[in-house]
Length: 193
Image (cartoon, rainbow, N blue to C red):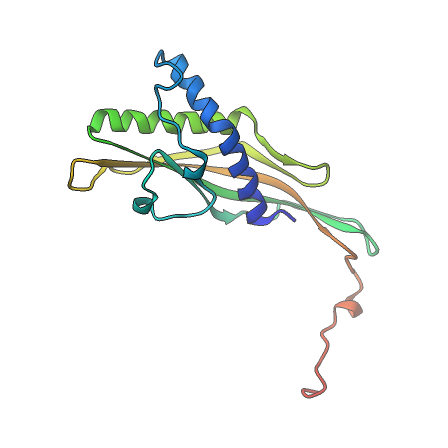
C-alpha cells in the first residue's frame, strides 16, 4: 500500500522535477526571461512540515498531508486471493513561502509561484503507476488560500499561500487475505485463560 508516505514521496518527486521548469516557462511567457521568477532549490522543497522562519531560503515549498478520504471502493480477490484492492483519496496541502521588501512585488511573486505550482500539478496528473498501484491528482478538487503578509520588523516581508489538492489512489494489500472468520479469531494468552 502507498499510504501517506508513498503519496507524499510521489508528489515531492514530481514537484522537484517539474516545478522549476514550470516556473521558468511561466516567467518566459510573462516576458520576464527564464530567471525572472525565483525558483526554489531542491533542498527548499520539503516533503514534511518545517519551521517556516527557520527555512532561511526562499522561495520554499512544504508538502504536508491533510487527511485521508473515505475508501471509495473495495475489490476483494476471494478467500484465497493474493491481494485486496482499495481506493483512497488523500488530501494534501502544498505550501509556498516567499519573501520581499515591498508589499506589491512580494504579493505578485506569491501569486506567480502558486500559479506555477498549480500548472505543475495539472500538467502531469499521474504521480505514480506501477501497474498495480497508482496515485493521480484529482483535477476536480483544487483549493487555494493566501495568508496575510507578515513583517519581521526589519523590513523583510514573508508571504505564504497553499494549494490543497486530492490525490486519488488505487492500493493493494498483498499476501493471503483470509475471509475465514476462524482464522481471525483472537488468541487468548494462557495466563488470561
